[in-house]
Length: 319
Image (cartoon, rainbow, N blue to C red; front, side, top):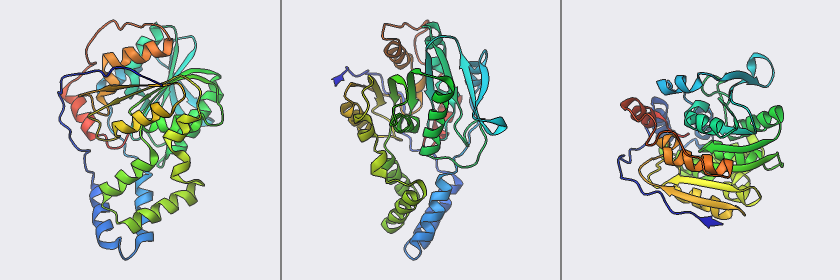
């Protein structure tokens, strides 16, 4: 494993905490008043609420990024996942995170298309423009697997947050992907602990929820450890994580890169969990990694950082 020098940037962001929705506030009251007396019932309600992702109004830039895309569906009929494709050449997939959308990674499209790749992204079940009310890490992974089986061998996957964890899990069976770029990856176990803290759940409730997750999905959180999954993959892997990320700890990304047989790690500052997706230096580094040669962006600086962007970043909770 090689460690690349960190990007050092001026600190322009405040470490704001994730926004608190009405559902979260209600769960805090429920967890505090009923959790001790009825841990199993509270765990069931908490898990059901957590598996129902919120949908956010996308910023205008995503409509601009969608222009020129060819839309298709992953899966059968109208219930399939909505997906978009740009360009021709070896396939690069863009996988979004929890409560996100494929077009959040739209800043990568033009540089990768110009570098000679076909770029594909999608909205996971119950996210963005795709149907459904519930989703999970496993739904994400199933979708990634379905995209790869539908399109054929994939040159690279660029994945953000839970999309990164889902990518590592999806590739466990040996799906044909040559390179991996992970942005702000988290670990399911750490995400569950943060969720319990956010909801103010007692330990008994958290334990009951873990048991329900195991019963529902047929495996423990340790079996989907991103660090363990990364250690099993031989592909070249680049991990980029911001030190000011309040949604996924930077040390999680560092451990994933260290565990991967051919991993490298870059730390950034001042970009947080979502603006990192629009930073020109990050996009250029990932495009160069994917192409395995230097790629230079036409424009420099952050892409479209406006008040609308800041509000959109603050509204996103877990992706």
